[in-house]
Amino acid sequence: MDKIIIEGGKRLSGTIPISGAKNAALTLIPCALLTDEPLTLRNLPRLADIDGFQHLMNQFGVTTAIQGSRPEDFGRVMTLEATRITGTVAPYDLVRKMRASILVLGPMLARMGEATVSLPGGCAIGNRPIDLHLKALEAFGAQIELAQGYVRAHAPDGGLPGGEFDFPVVSVGATENALMAAVLANGTCRLRNAAREPEIVDLCNLLVAMGAEIEGIGSSELTVHGVKRLHGATYRVMADRIEAGSYACAAAITGGEVYLDGARADEMEATLHALRNIGVTCDADKKGVRIAAEGPLKATNLSTAPYPGLATDMQAQLMALLTVAEGTSVLTETIFENRYMHVPELARMGADIETSGRTAIVKGVPKLHGAEVMATDLRASMSLVIAGLAAEGQTQVRRLYHLDRGYERLEEKLALVGAQVERVGDD
Ligand SMILES: CC(=O)N[C@H]1[C@@H](OP(=O)(O)OP(=O)(O)OC[C@H]2O[C@@H](n3ccc(=O)[nH]c3=O)[C@H](O)[C@@H]2O)O[C@H](CO)[C@@H](O)[C@@H]1O
Ligand SMILES: C=C(OP(=O)(O)O)C(=O)O
Image (cartoon, rainbow, N blue to C red; front, top):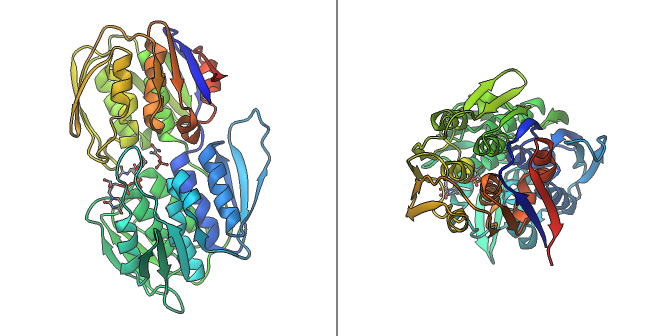
């Protein structure tokens, strides 16, 4: 297994290109199931999860072709064509490795009138139930059965009649599944307290480009008037606001200055607000965001929340930054019950963090020191890399498959701005 070796203490300076967003791409790809015409997605990141989803789509008989870009370029173009769908089952083995596979349930049901998807089960950051995905589909008229670890969804002959669903808690995944099911319904579907993350807006924009009729895009009430058929489209995946926020933390912890090329400040306000409170300068222009950490880093209190609140996917990286800020910070994780797996690993590098339930108290220390650490999940992995960039001496981060799910060519991007970081085979 590979590991990343970081020699800490190098100030980052320069430009980092921001890739297409994993969490948008993983909900745009299954939209190909909604039409028999080609769907072309541009600016797809090169990530293990994208390859995994491509493989899943191939299992349903969807043809996929990657075109264009050279290996040295960031971003890829993929054309997916679901002319004839030959299977409607997403098996456990694929769903287990890639939780986003659950997002085929809605579009497959809408197009084929049936879908069978393995239940994803728990994962390192928490329980991650899918009851709201199922309840929303039921509210639109689907029949759902659970058997042998699989969800089986059926639509009445002639398609989903439509209906209304009020989310008791905001769910990104359930909003996505419900939207993809609703666009081909016979009637109107309404979602209240829907998620309004930028990735949901990206999904709505693609669906509209394919001919869907959606009102309320960007708000928490979405109304979808079902249409008979959708057509193909060519669409550019939005920039990855979490990747951008992660590199902002990386630059800040080294006292550096970087330009996040392609980042959209309006989609990452809560992260930029947190960074400013920590004492980091963030200046946006039309093409990206400049991050500069000139003075000392200061403690701050943070609480994760659905958009427009602070993304849970930024909690671990901001915590890494706060380990060396002056003073005591209190972090509250409200989305997932077990998203502090990075804490014991950061402690191995000298961080002073105490957790109690959903709260973490971070007392800033003057210096971190390099250590061998183990990545436990995607954003936890990035927090260890960020800590390693500032630590005295060498840090070795092991179990890189998490990072490879979500950060396109991490070592190359960090090297572009002067980090001393390399990936080596483990022995
Ligand atoms: C609101 C939120 O921040 N969602 C995050 C969540 O999306 P993801 O789609 O994975 O999770 P949800 O948004 O669905 O979950 C939000 C909350 O709702 C609960 N829930 C969800 C579905 C369900 O059927 N029943 C239920 O009770 C979850 O346990 C969680 O507490 O993880 C992703 C990966 O880290 C992040 O990119 C998303 O920003
Ligand atoms: C946990 C994440 O992703 P996934 O839902 O794909 O596990 C993430 O993007 O931080």
